[in-house]
Length: 296
Length: 265
Image (cartoon, rainbow over all chains, first blue to last red):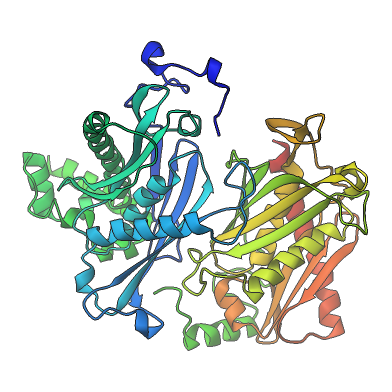
């Protein structure tokens, strides 16, 4: 399904610019908001280019029916769905094979990041809903879901940051849009990493690629995921302002050192923070600011 | 978890209701304020996000070309679907449509369809051969009661703003090009009530629905018609029904004015 006829297809090698004006390694605009759904234990709303997704986390809660329980760990249950109007041609409401496969691979990616062994016999239910899409909805969902897990206060080794990488119109690129995904030479590789360890937790590919091209693409993907990670961190910090973290962390931050808990528990905001109403947070911030000024 | 319904909540709500009060401080005939955003989903022919208190729904329309139904060969059609997403409440599950989903979708559908707001013959392309079908689906994103009214607002707003696709000479849809809109002659809106502690209250929250003895929804239009009614669980007297219909016109009128103002912007 090519987006346009072959003879006027763009040539990225010549043009040095992509159909939407981006550079080859440039992401589409990405914004994340955490804690948007009051009913969920953790949630996030993410916009990435035209993609718009909601993620919600419930649990850890008793896994039912009982035979689904694992006495050694929590079961990570991800449900990926698309709204009927999220695609150019109306999608049938019931889940299809693609929805099922994506749910599975997203679950496997998040399973690696969560300390599931701390919650035997439970399930952690993650629901992601795509309401508008334009290529890369699964990596958008994974990025949102990992923020929602952190928002729920579930202990994690790291956040999961994801992006698309691949090839279109003769050049290796990052974060393909729909037109690029439909290019005659398109290669689409959704990839997700835990940025602090560099471990890859999601990797799929379709298209034709040489191993030399993969060798060039892999570092592009890691770099792009790290950029996504920065946006995720910012979104969580907005929800849980730095003043709420312990003195030790703040001091270490000021000193430019890694706080003792930075790599692990920093992405695990304290549960107390979640229950505190947002307005009160702001007030306390102001109070704290004033107090600081007085001290000075 | 904050969504767990405690016996205490239910008895407290009933006790307050008997004194004409509500847990969130509203009076019995005061609906929650709603907000409406339009057109955020670019793949949809229309989209509308409604927040009614903490209830959030997202509706969208896709228009397709199909064969007219044999009994109405000169008419197009609309279709309304609803999904109470598992992310909206810990009580909801992903899976085949539940009774609640089908009920809310059909009541919202009837309110619009039976008001004769949409002239279906205008959606016909060629008699007996092809017509346009507008599929409206709405999703509960966060459920805090009264998905009927929130769904009705989102559905109406999306029908009001839906673009119709442009067709080529073979009556196939030309992608990303539009030609005309769906005309609405009336603007029907649902208003939902519950009876708690013998008192009737409008626009119930999740907890108020849990505490309720009976539920009733009615769709009203700006020119004085009722276009759909639905009694849920429980029972009402004729007087109670008449009273709720009276109040529904007032509530729907206020909401309709606000909705029109936002749509016209």
